Image (cartoon, rainbow, N blue to C red; front, side):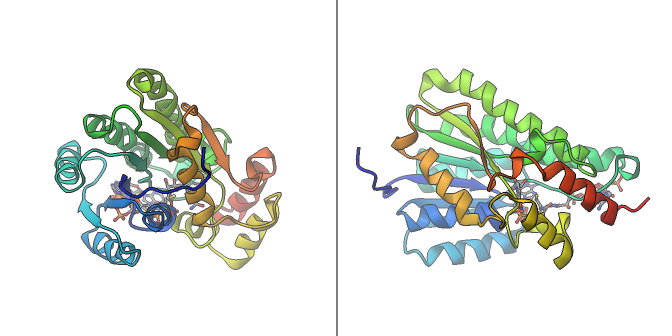
Length: 269
Ligand code: NAP
Ligand code: COA
């Protein structure tokens, strides 16, 4: 098999694809020839992302929906079907995060992250399924190290992302026979993103995070996008139900201790 990765003629949808890591993923697919559609809540962010993606020269579409709103998602996927046709690659990465100790988090604070990350992922999967190319579609959920590493100030995200990886595994079993593969990518700390600004809101904390990574740097959206390209390509045709850390070795150790240090700064007792 040729190692050339070419997505010309392929349709890629990225939910939550208007900033940060997910926009980086959309850009990399556009750069490799794909027709790309991105969606999130803010019409202004969608418009800006579409303009950025158009620089790669291919067809680009955008739409708005909150992943917590099932009817809005149904309308969004209908729109994308009319614009793109069947979906070859679906990336689901909408998420919310804020650092807060359990005793300072309201039930609604916990629920809002559960609803965006976990219920949202489920609703995106369920709504998209009829529009996926079967066989051969590839679905990628964007998880987080919190899915399997307990971190202080992150009880909502830990619970939600653990659930996201279970959605990945269960749907890999249910959808395997129809030829749809579904995998999770677990990004480590990715420099300059909204997520890292929230979890390490100072230069000193950012430096501590970088130092705690075995490869001694934070990742880039491209590091994650290249894994997405691989997972969506025929090179990965026997990979489904996998949860793949792309984190410079962060999850091998150090990350939880690191988060305790951050917790002391962000939430002094
Ligand atoms: P980001 O820039 O804030 O990206 C989040 C995206 O999701 C935005 O496009 C946002 O746009 C959209 N979104 C948020 N809530 C939504 C909702 N209810 N419905 C629809 N869209 C919604 O964050 P990021 O830091 O790049 O993180 C991207 C993904 O990577 C997330 O899944 C995150 O958990 C994961 N991750 C990040 C890191 C990191 O270091 N940053 C590490 C591990 C995992 P709107 O505001 O317009 O809705
Ligand atoms: N500490 C404690 N609670 C917080 C909080 C914080 N820093 N930020 C929000 N909350 C609580 C709110 O107080 C509210 O609870 P309440 O009704 O009991 O007061 C609840 O969370 C929902 O907040 P709201 O602002 O109404 O939610 P939203 O749906 O508009 O936004 C968030 C969802 C809170 C997750 C928001 O931060 C967001 O939209 N994030 C997307 C971007 C992002 O997080 N990117 C990083 C991805 S890793």
